[in-house]
Amino acid sequence: MLNVDLHCHSNVSDGTLTPTAVATRAKLNGVDIWALTDHDEVDGIAEARAAAAMLALRYVPGVEISITWAGHTIHIVGLQIDETNPQLVQGLAATRGGRERRAREMAAQLAAVGIPDAFEGALKHVGNPDLISRTHFARYLVEIGRCADTPEVFRNFLTEGNPGYVPHRWASLEQAVSWIRGAGGVAVVAHPGRYKLSDLAFDAFFNEFKQLGGAAIEVMTGSHTIDQYAVYAKVAADYGFMASRGSDFHSPGESRVDLGALPPLPAGVVPVWHDW
Image (tube, rainbow, N blue to C red):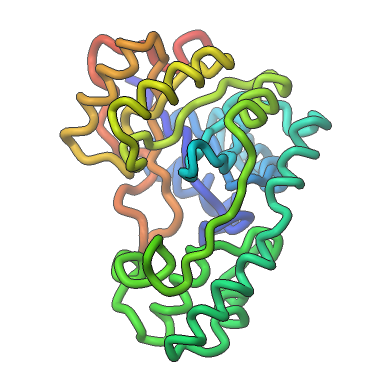
């Protein structure tokens, strides 16, 4: 059985390892097919592809696009993309725009509750300044001892209703799926169990995603609980989606699941890689 990991991050977005180091870790962990899916950015793909070739690791070019749907931030993974596609490149650049302004607003809120210099502190953890995010702020708050770990940060800061939370208007679902499909890729809903949507809203979202040409959802992901594996396997079957598997690995010290460490896909689903 193939060990497939189609969702992880490097320091090109909000991971801590270089694309080469992520590829090496995937290979050492027994991964057979691997995708790097940095947030709203494809600049790590060339390095990742070269590293995978050196390691005899089958590589899938990917990206994770942030969207806003019904007021919620949702992530759409694109797999088997052509990262040079102009529509995709331009769309991702537009999506990244505004992150610095948002980050400065986040820092101002943190300063108001006694945490100064958070913008400068977060920048120390950023591999790509265009992609400064809540994760970088979280690492800074851990570094200065304000919280013990990043989960504690997100329980107390940077989330809705807490200091440091600043919403951002991302791409639309239609735009993200269009960019991915236009680049020859497969659109996948990342970690659906993370989103706080009602059953009715989920039904509307999945139907819209399918109508736009979305093809798969993540069933096995480091962001799902064991119980959710079966829940989203059923969702995939009910809506006719293929199933994907990805650790959502960011860092050896932070990620709940390491590269390649998830259980296999449940029986009865069609793997997104079935015809690759």
